[in-house]
Image (cartoon, rainbow, N blue to C red; front, top):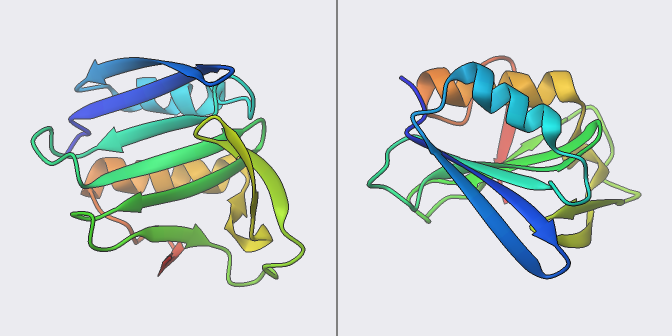
Length: 136
């Protein structure tokens, strides 16, 4: 299974320019994740089914620190966590054009983030790849 649509956001202050790529390759998705810089490029969205805009995976932040979360039919909201890390102190991260404080155990390195993205890419779900998700 491949992702039906990827939306990459570029923020300039409170304005956002969205680039939508239909049927992106895994290489394009991974390149977009690597491009996130926790500044102007700080969020992207993957949708497994083009007609289902209520199910998606979001990768936010960048520059080596990422928040990975999403939605399933806007009923469940999975967030990737590291059960071996403490939630506090919180860490600052830019997601969706805004700086916010996030639990430390929800901030991941690039390798972990790419594992989650690859699993979502291949299975269209939150889970597997030895990763731990909670409903936030």
